[in-house]
Length: 75
Image (cartoon, rainbow, N blue to C red; front, side):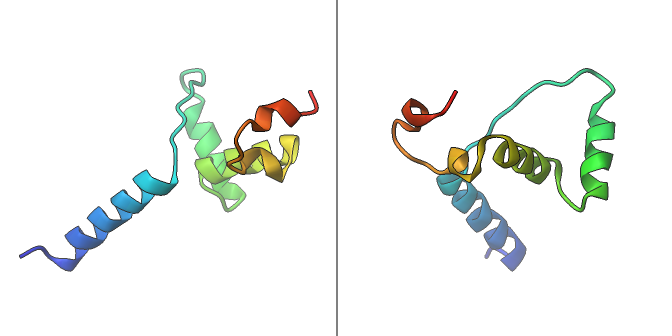
């Protein structure tokens, strides 16, 4: 029988796959630790920090799943 931790891990993984997408990007070698520390000092994960930057730059709506959203962007 599966233990509770394993079941929780699988349930969380399934939820994340169904509700989130992943983006991978590159930064110069040796700067990852700086980014992690900076985000930590702000009380955020690197992911949350990047999402916050995107929202601040483009607005909350940019991260709202809407079909053809790009057509209304004020660029």
